[in-house]
Image 1 (cartoon, rainbow, N blue to C red):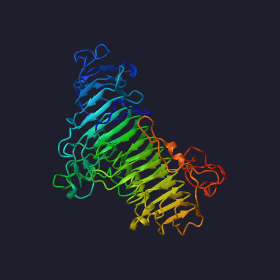
Image 2 (cartoon, rainbow, N blue to C red):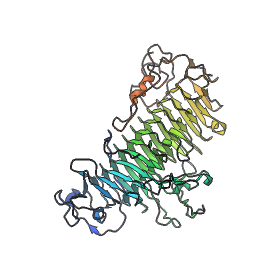
Image 3 (tube, one colour):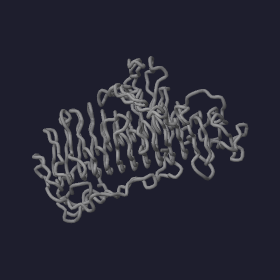
Image 4 (tube, rainbow, N blue to C red):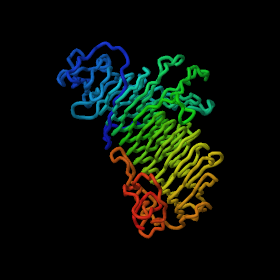
Length: 566
């Protein structure tokens, strides 16, 4: 089923600028005075490539005309609303600080549509360019399905920003776009090749995996056998106010090249650089992308069996992911991997499922080699797992003031290696669909977890709370069914938290509404709740609760909502 982009206008708006410039080109646009730039118009129906293109009455017609032009700082390339082009949009040139080159639309009507039709790897492309804004386009890149599921999947993307010139490419804004129906192949890092299927491959390594989908920011090298000494880095990226629907592998992807490319026999043929993978938190080879903001977007994979991650955020340092909705993704709604200083906040993620051979189905996942991660003020419901802490090798995370409800396997899954640690406090965790509230097993229980001030409520008596010598429970409320209170929680509160309106039944986030965070207010506690004033103060707590109330209102409360009732 195709994603209906025309009817959707999300609440958020964002801006894309980036990369220095790539190739020599055939037509040079005239420089403008004081970077004010020139406006160029494109009309697929009434345009003429022999026209000046500089007025709406004399527009160009084809993508080829735009692609053969090198634009200057401050220029604007405007596509006529309601028109459609088939092929690739790859304008050349770079803007500069304060004078980006902008791709947008003019006229009334639906977004102009760029359709790769599965004939090009990238429907919209920038390479070794920087300071670009892409706004108000509809983008798709779909190979029609055949009688064999997955046979139509290819190395495809909607919008692709990349480079290989060993420079820092700055200033990308993607704002108000609708990207949908991109039939990208699904390549997994590991797994077993015995599970390969049409369109789905395992054991493809870091560089070969997870780089298809709706909006992809990544980098590469000119020669994998002789890479340069310096990585290409993408800096200052904003993706906002956009919709991404039914795009495989993922909705939005960030990746850095690392040099582990393989041939068809599975043998590594690339010279390793280590830029994208890391052996320790201070690995000197690690070269992440920087200053990433992803906000006010709606991502859904509801109508594709191959749409895995909603957001795959790897190899970044300094990222803010806020006020997004991710619905029915596969594997992970929001996953971070080999990244530092990432905050996930004010998001709604729900109904994540297992798809295309993926092992997981979680809402938010700080994964391998992730440091200084904060997961706060999110509404996480109806997934397989709510929050997966999967910090293999090393990592640290704070999970606070979230509402985590109705996930079918584990509300919180403790799955990190010994060198990792996590602080999990002041969450409201409501379970009515699983035998586990907080779960971990084996060597993953050697990581350190501090679990404090949480409302742990279950309607199911069998719901377990995993314990180990490195897990500390303190000042939590245990309610609903008769839960086995961990022996170490000397300040445990046992009783009915007096939830305001449980269970929750919507409304949930849509492209039109954005995240419906207020729905989770049904899990506030009422006056007289034993959660009021029964918590312990925590320094560096972010300063507010799930609903925005200042901390603290008297003695600290237990749970995601501070009521001031003590």
